[in-house]
Image 1: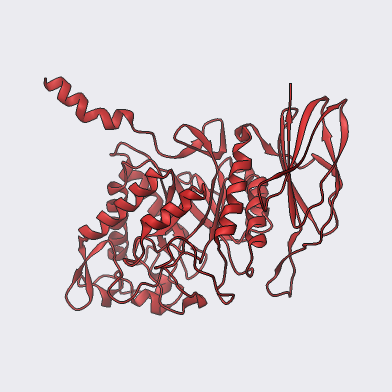
Image 2 (image 1 turned 180 degrees about the horizontal axis):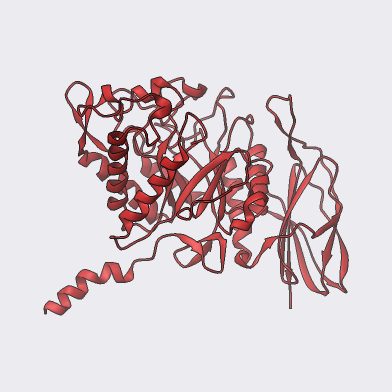
Length: 470
């Protein structure tokens, strides 16, 4: 009887899936619940847990209904205020009295850094659990740059906002190793979160959002990564650690061995993927914006990044606000980014396109396209030579001195792509990324060398899938 009781108690551990990881056959991609995975989403502005007015179940239902599988949250060690960054309806700017943090509240509108908030951890774990039920991965961003003194001085870790006398630092010293008591308080928060979430298979930890601003120190980032990994050494599960490297692009020198996912913001064009592909790790575009409004802009950036060899795309979607957790809020043009139900639908077509391939066997194919890319257009390709090919062609580009500086040509046109293919029998299918429909399909026999494939008429962008039929 005792043996039966013990086995019953261990059953959840024996049947649980391991956490999301790098795919063992191709570490440029994820493995999640036994399947090769790319993470693609258009997600809210990171306040789903810390903002008590945000109905996260409704929000997660919306992501799941769109076949999107990622969300990103901040932990509560940072918040914003109405008007910050000109964001309307900002989920990171909760109303007074609606902000929840990992620490227990104390008299005088302060926090006690030696005591945890049971309500916060109940909400955090329920959020991750609800995401897990829907097959959604949660990127838990532990810290973020504070950007200015005002936001730092409203943080529980600042000396005037806690009862512990901790955090006597300037904002650009707050995420460094200069103040040992502050570092220990930060480390304790990390240990607590990592311990509370260890049982979940859908968690990735990001060290810090935009550490290239406001003096965030590299040795402090390495310290936080080691707090995560050392805490998990004594726990059943090990989770991936991500690091935000730069805006746009940048070559990663001396990568932290604890880090498995490298993130960039506003990485268009996706130069960062090519620059760092040799690291054999996941490369992500983890935040978009500042390129105006409209589905085409952020749809193209997602397709372009993933077809360049990235495995993680998160459009920062401002259509999710408290009261419109289904993402139905019409985003004002003044906001620094964009989101909409239609954009999320279009990103679901990207997910479906990738999942139509055995993509862990594919790699960027820079020499596949011999000719046929129109003027002012760009193309990306992934390939497993002789077996499967994915090509994406688009007319989005950055223009210096233009506001917004990312523009999309929408003239109706067609092209004839010249592709270097080995001999074989193939099926070619042209997809419209705006509506997910296959607009032309043909089966052909090829003797080797350059093959010319004529596209259907298209606007803005078009995708091509070629698979061997033998």
